[in-house]
Image (cartoon, rainbow, N blue to C red; front, side, top):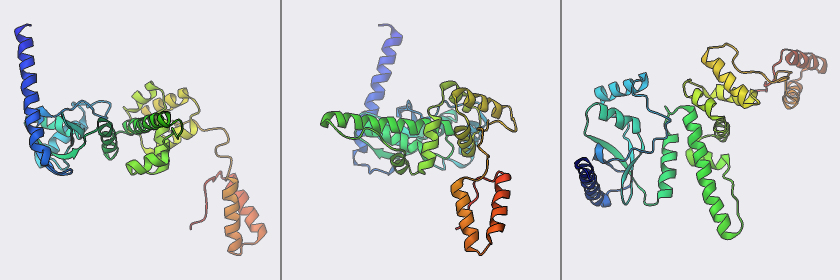
Length: 287
């Protein structure tokens, strides 16, 4: 063993002793309470983000905000039997490290099971407003696969049972709308190169809906993303017949609405034909 190896082993042992002392002191801490931790004792290896661009404008703005106003939102750490693991707020901690800070105040989550720790981190990260929509899609997909893995294990154990974890259940778990979860699960199925390129764009949820609705192949998704990156005014291909007129159910709703308001049959017919020719497909009466 070289001198460098011995020094690394000594530092690692010293760090583990410090972590165990801190964990012992935290045994009486309440779940949801806060405490200051030495940054060097925190485990930061499970960031849900694809990357942290320390030279990017957002990270530099975050550092400036922390320098001027301090932490406005505390990072979240999971205290287990053997570690203090960051499950939310990696960028804030990295910014503090860059600013030369040695300690950080964090909110404590006391989690004993590794399985629960993984799920807690995924759910914690989906609550962050500034998470890129592709990273959010990947997190939601991981939640789905994580929960379905548990269901499969239970089904195998009992010889029967459901093995699918629905979008509705995910939505309830993370506090989002079912349709939002469904759209992002589709994003998670995009090919890798499309996801990687999408991370360079500031995609809106509306654009995600259009991409999912109008792109039939992986190639179309990727080409549409390239067009968005080039500021093409019409980046998303339109499905043939997508604007062929109002849907039948909406047409029937409008007809009934006009009839209830005493509009005669001939006028209704002319109006419905006009709206159809104008390719207004989604109109429906206000409730």
